[in-house]
Image (tube, rainbow, N blue to C red; front, top):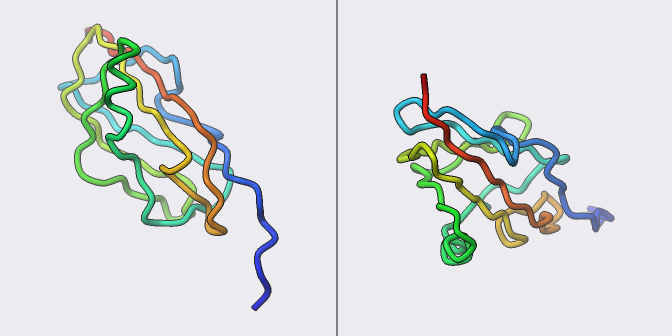
Length: 120
């Protein structure tokens, strides 16, 4: 079996909500998705290791319920977030140790920020 020549880490190409968005979260809940530009290695996930950094910067850390679910293509992971409070800005730091592609290359660092607005 030939060794992989992939030495480039995956890039985040989309998030939902998009970073910087203002969202309405009925019941204080929403699904949050992160899409990468390549097939990802299962077993990696967001941890709460960045909570102190998030709080130090004046943001709230979202309460992720359970584990993320990968799509069939293996490039998008979706998390269910609960306990969101209108008026709060949330930060979800994605660090190099959070995700890796199938070749083991670490992902880029990225901060997903979103503000929860009061619903109608």
